[in-house]
Structures are given as structure tokens and as C-alpha cells.
Length: 245
Image 1 (cartoon, rainbow, N blue to C red):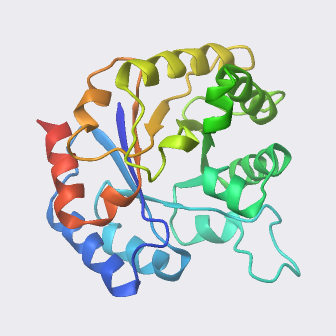
Image 2: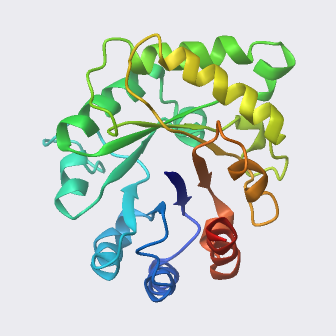
């Protein structure tokens, strides 16, 4: 199984999100042999789920609060996303970590709440440019994995990881496929210290229609988490079609 996940971030308004979902609906990808999921904003999530409910395309939350209910102004819980049809939720995306100050402890709390709600967490990990320049990439990845997985109880197929080097996200400076493979092999070996379950690991960071096949052609990489290139009908459509060939 290969995964194509499109993180729409805050790029699209309501109408643009619906138009893109309608495009995916008309593509008839039910028997594609890949797991395709999109991560729209909370504003349009229910409408996207209604559009895609008769297809095999899944949806996921870009982020969810870990309390299940209560006086938490501005939060949307994992249970609420599950109730309207979501399958996945991102945890620890670098923009959440570095722009909003989320810690490894916060990420772990979210992962547990997602599993409790019946959502599949996509745990995002990655090193900064400072980490890379200081030769601390493996240290940073190992620490993030330990905090997310140590003592975590889950069944096979319930958890995924996305390796997204922070220095590559939105910069157009994608990680070389060979380097991404090296990091993902390391990530899988670290996860194996905490669980015997197979955990798919996706690559994300400036993935586009020109380079996506260079990642999918490598056996260690189980898919791609795509940002801005997933928000345009032309580029996202080309990415999907190229992987399906």
C-alpha cells in the first residue's frame, strides 16, 4: 500500500476546497491501489466528507485538541472529527511545533486522544536546518519517536509517521530521495524499538509533480504527505496520475 496525503493547510477558502473535492470525486479513484486522503480546514470538513463519502478517498484533520469535551475555546476534539467522518489526523506537524509551540508532550497527548477517538494519527517528525548543520538529525528524530511511541498501545494499521525535514517544507528545497530513504530507514529502525507493528512512513517536504515519483520508486518510502502542490487541481491531479501509472 502506498499513501498520497494532501495537507491543504490554510491555502484554500470554502469554495476552493469544495471545487478541489469535486474534482477528486469525478476522478473515480476507488480502485486505484493507493490510499488517498486530504486534510482540509475544519471550516469545510463536513462538506468535503459529504462529497467524498461514496469514494475510497479519506479525510483527516490538520490538528485536533486532545481534551474530548469541555471549556476549551477554539478547540475541535478528535471525537468531533471522527463523528463527521474523518479517518486520520495530523499530530506534531512542524508548523504546529515551531509556530504554535507544541512540544513532544503535546504531540503524545494528541496521539493518544486520536487513538481513543478512533482516528489514525499521522505523527509528523523532522529535523531543523540547525539540527542538520549540527549533525543532530538522528538525535532529533530518535527523541521525537521515543516521546511519541514509548509505551504507546496500538494495533497494526492504526498509526502512520510522516518524515518532514523542517528545512524542506515550503522552501522548494526537497530532501534528496537517497537522503530521505536513509532517514526513513533510520526512523523505522527506531520505531521497531517500541513496537513490533508495521508503521508506514511517508515523506513530506516540497513534494511536487516533478519529484514525487523519485520518492515513490524507493521501497523504504511508503508514500508522500504533500502540502501546497496538493491544493491545485492541475498539480495534485498530475501527482495522483503519475503514481497510478
